[in-house]
Image (cartoon, rainbow, N blue to C red; front, side):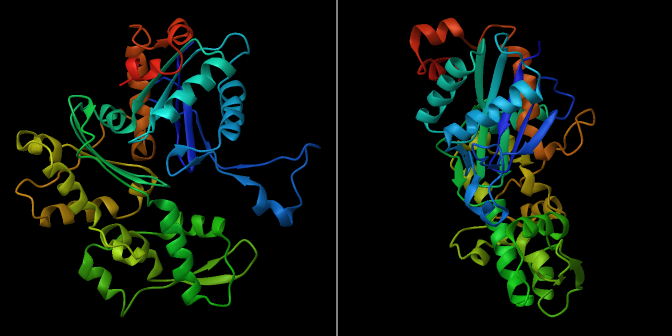
Length: 361
């Protein structure tokens, strides 16, 4: 049985057997709705009150919900049999607290009785997915942005940067902007999320964005309840916020400048290798026009060496940006488990959860 690879993001959980040249067999929302004891969903008017987010800002926060989600993923989705559990590789976000890693290992060995475990950082795995062991990842997820220089398969943590903003904050920004232009329409957040995914894009540059102030094509969009809204400049504002964080009310540099500053704190011997092997990943990075805008900003940046994006190999699945860490995990699983580099049940029984820091680094 192939090892299972699980990448649990704030918005989507990606899981599947470790087959690197295929997309993950499961991509499901991480968010859950709590079912009442009688098996029914709560009254629809109260559904907002029983939504559960097992993962927030990239880290597992609700362990009971995570256990339920993993039970569904492993036994129903991937077809594991109780009593015949396999091996599992988990992806770790940047700066995952030690306590979270230990609790995950404990949950999997004690509640799921897995036969082997390994975890690796998402930044390293996203580089593996495009055939690199050194480079820099810019991971723009639903709940956070991670910028991580990786040298010879190891994250340079001192130079790495984590920002607790992501797709969820862009959704809230879009809701606010749509509220200004459509004041009589009440749009719920799940509809705003869908609108963001359908319409959001990046202007070619800052000047092009400023021009949308004076003239911008508008489109009519019909909501599920039949109400009609107008969408215009808002679609560009969402993408622009990544390059001008002041739109979100933040005093921070844009995403390209953050990348350059991150790498500038690494030894200058590594600057070229890191900047010229930049990988964009995370669902938000697949926004229309984002890659082109990123490249244009990179060409204008103050660094002597300009960031250059690595294109995924042709044999890799489409939309690799969305799940590159999962694909890298599938590649790594083909190495660590056959070569017995993972945490075994015997390792866990002998040392306890802290063994994860010794075996997975």
